[in-house]
Image 1: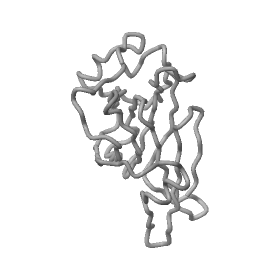
Image 2 (image 1 turned 180 degrees about the vertical axis):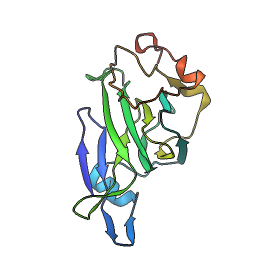
Image 3 (image 1 turned 30 degrees about the horizontal axis):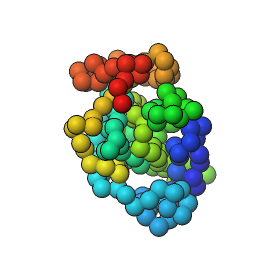
Length: 189
């Protein structure tokens, strides 16, 4: 397993070891002991979620505020996404900054090795993703369960955050709820 720090403290890209051959592959997608030793990600996961999206679906930018702030270990089982984490930690030097990564289903590289990545988004971040392909299946482990009273979000295309969402050859599909989210400057945490 390889762990890569991002430009924002605490956000990590994790590349688990896939064991593959001509039949396919095997991967341990999470093990508390190994993840704690190599990445500092502990055993606090309490809920797993899976979503399915067609190309163009943009979900986010969502967060849960304290005391129910969620850390998320996210990955893609089918398809591809452009995934984003926005720092909302009060007092952080990177407040309002974002990190993005493209995640895809496990795939075989030209050298025959298998590749798959996960994205660790600690508590205190807003999260969102854009499905880049039809039949995208996205999964995430959460450190807190869903708490409606702590549910929040910021507008996906806030110019202050300036996320460079990729052009995908079709319109973005955004829920009414997500289209009505506030700007970062109007956020009340």
